[in-house]
Structures are given as C-alpha cells and as structure tokens.
Image (spheres, rainbow, N blue to C red):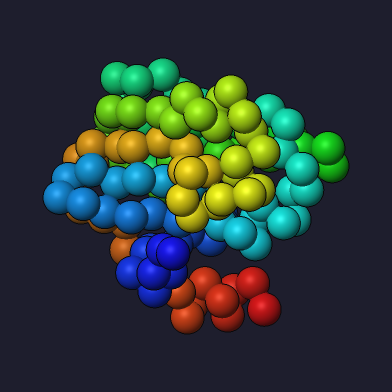
Length: 124
C-alpha cells in the first residue's frame, strides 16, 4: 500500500509522488469517490508541456465531467495507458494503478502543495 503521508497534495484533489525530477500525478481517493464511477479519461500526450494550475486533461464519470489541472510545470514524460483503456482504475486504485501522468518537473515546486494532514483538513 502507498504511504499517503509521503505524498504531496493539491487543493484540486490531486496527489503527487516525486522521484528525482519526475513526479507521478493522480487524483485522490476523495476526488474519485466524489466523481463516482469514472468512465472516460483524457490525458495530455507524452512530450506535452504543462503549466502548474492550467487544465491538462479531463475526467468524466457517471455523475459529472471534471478538469484535470497540472499541479506542476514541466513536460509529460509518460501517461498511464492502462487508465485510458480502463478508467475504472481511477476508482479502484487511485494511489496505485490509477495514476494518470508523469511529469519531468521544471523549476521549483509550487509553495501551495499540501501534506496529508493539511489535505485531510481541506476535505473534512
């Protein structure tokens, strides 16, 4: 199981795991639960430039359509094709097999990233 306290979070309900200069990004279990059954995921292409705070994709569920915001500035180095093929992974494994994109981070990390306790306060 993923150590949720080792991750960073955004107020847009994304989690970030950083390994060197590459960050893996997904949506949190809270967001997945609020969305309901995810039926479609649109992700940016590999080698796409993304800017922190800008829309970079879309997540559609049986309840609504939500935008995916880039939590960091950089270049997409990998997308999770398994999630594109089977969007239900976002619900079933939000912190594991349901990750969305990997970004090679450029510059500093945003100052507004949250730790697990702050994220839990946000969603309480």
